[in-house]
Image (cartoon, rainbow, N blue to C red; front, top):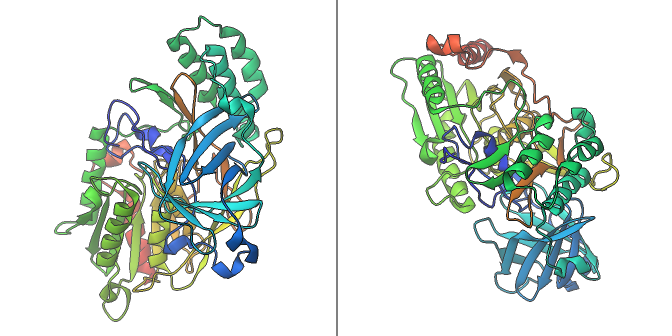
Length: 492
């Protein structure tokens, strides 16, 4: 984040960086677009699409499975609506079709401040929505028309804001049972406190109090640059610039004298060759790799770094790496496909990264969309297939966690060293209120091949090691890095 006073808004799907917004140099993200792309998570081949898709039109109104979202396509224009049982508000995503639909009816839409998105017909009544800066896809079902309330002016009364906020969580949040929170009881406790005369400060205090017990880094409410709240897991200490400087000093000491780290992506990616032919690759976020901050620029800069790191000399032959350390202990998240691009350089065979599903029944939190598989596909070029150690901690968040999860199916499996990750994986469902405020929540699960999720608890390490303790930082020690070096030296 580059804003030390409040959250930075941009149209990105993995908005976890609100956790870091006031205190760290990692860039904040919020967003509302979706799904799939890049060589690491390629869309389905054309042969898998129904033959009738080529003649179907996208014109009309669509309901997205899960997500509480409606999508309208009229001529070259696309727009979204954010819905609950009591509300329909204009969404944050608008798009303009770029060129004509292709032979299959597929249309690509440019979206301000975000990656392009693609709509693909799959018959007369269904379509899919994908976006390059998001892993997976979302299903669209045709409906006859927008609900009448979508054309009405929404009330700006504080009671209406409360109702939309509570209802959005009630219909989309998957983890109330796991968090041991009775959301109906939350409504009964706080709703009587809201009247037509409730001030903005009072309303904000109530909305914050409602979600703070969830201890979820993907929950937030933003009422202005100086009035916002983002959750976090208990025990999480937000990194300050002073803390980050101490971490850098400890890592530098752990790498050893004379070791040169090369940097890319405005310092967010770095690499060093260590003695014993061990590589050290650090990733502090999956976004904002260029000053422009666009996703296409992020991809180009990441590929430039990966081409420089994973050379023929380091990946094969007598001079190849004997081990690789990947450090994501201070990673605030970003775009999942960037993590998949890195994973694609660490394998010579495809495998399942994870499966994504979204809560899909406003009345039943146990019902989800059909899980969408997201795969790691090998890079067409040099890849490293040797031993890997991944350094993680509670400040490994969101896309840092999905990246860690994407490596679990790799063979040989990496050794995770450090502490549990933060425990937030879902894209952030970014929503608005009629008074201009924004808020966010998770509504998805990222599943392993066996159906497990790590939401709340985070991904555990195989080798527990303290991460950035005060005592270690004061002594310029990095026990996690030292353990990874010893493990890889012993395994080679």
